[in-house]
Image 1: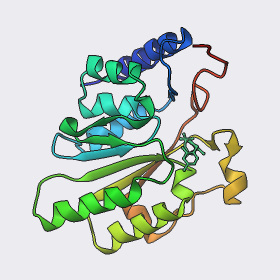
Image 2: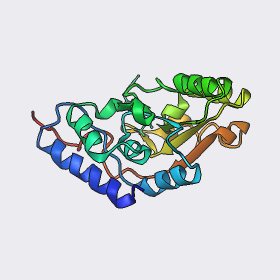
Image 3: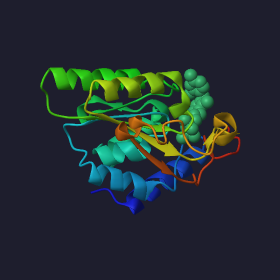
Length: 203
Ligand SMILES: Cc1ncc(C[n+]2csc(CCOP(=O)(O)OP(=O)(O)O)c2C)c(N)n1
């Protein structure tokens, strides 16, 4: 089982390598949500049968989904940090905001109607949860009772924009709605800048 320390040490190691200029591509490091992610994987019993979808900040998700540490590190060094895809481990990520909610709903539909084992878990940020496609996909997985859960990791910002100012509300749109049944939501403070290390890295 991957521990909080494993995740913290991994991100620190990638941060140190990124600082040398050896990774010629963006990386998005995260700290401060390790326990919440571990709890979700444990409580939901996310296993080999399940599909995990993530975005640009998915190093921790890959570790939790079972991607071997070295394989993950090599992919990141190869410039794939923001779009980590390991079909063998059923984790698929994209660097495009709002790009995977429909795909996740479609996979959940297929799993249900083909009678296959497995569920879908999509992890995204608080501003991603504001996109139109998030609304549409959540309504779809709710209305058709698909085996999918969307996890919203709220760090209060979208890059450097205060999410609450955009929402015009302290709470996300789905709070108090029936769609909460399909959503797991938690808040955290990211110990790293949104992207990179907050300083210019020269290659
Ligand atoms: C289509 C698209 N527009 C803009 C971006 C640039 N971008 C990357 S992450 C991000 C902010 C997303 O905010 P949130 O969903 O809250 O994610 P988090 O803060 O957790 O990284 C933006 C605008 C992008 N990757 N894709």
